[in-house]
Length: 233
Image (cartoon, rainbow, N blue to C red; front, side, top):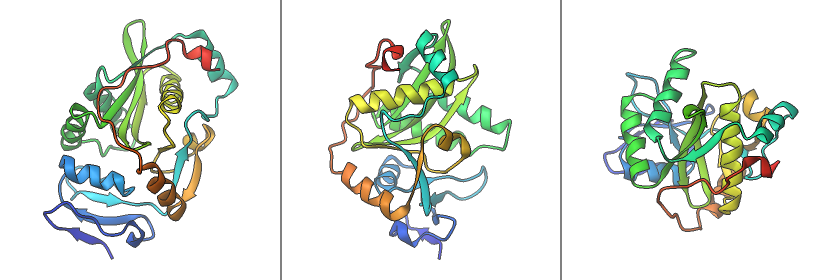
């Protein structure tokens, strides 16, 4: 059964999602509803022109901060410190770059409404971006939402080879420094698994989420705590 959401920001139990993970449709992308959704492990994902769809997949990939799998070639790139890592300096640009990269391939759920909604979350200190710069130009990055001790990853992009992987490694190391428990990557794919993501079922994920959400959320702008990423390899 797919639930139709009322006007007030409420959600059904995530375990009631259909076999594909679709839980509910409708509602809006207000700050209150988005924060509530993420606190329950629910996220919006829908195509342009469709109603808002809310998901709680039966399995989902998670990373544990500080435990990204680094290939030999990526290790060499990180050791060179060729990318400058910044955080929260161009959030909307990162979102739009993620949208453009996916639009060229298989279409994207990152439409104008999503960009407005998540930029508002960013302005309030709940959504964050990690950015890789090369010679002063944005080469890749990622963005997501941080609540409690969980980072809910939304999307990543690259203009220069490996830049998004370096951004993910930088995110992982910074989250380890901040005491975060996990990085939720929402939907499994081979790329995530190759970098060390572990697929967990909904019940186990909800247990981890409940534990991590017991910690206070501290909204605000992030700064990169690692001056030389090569020191972490």
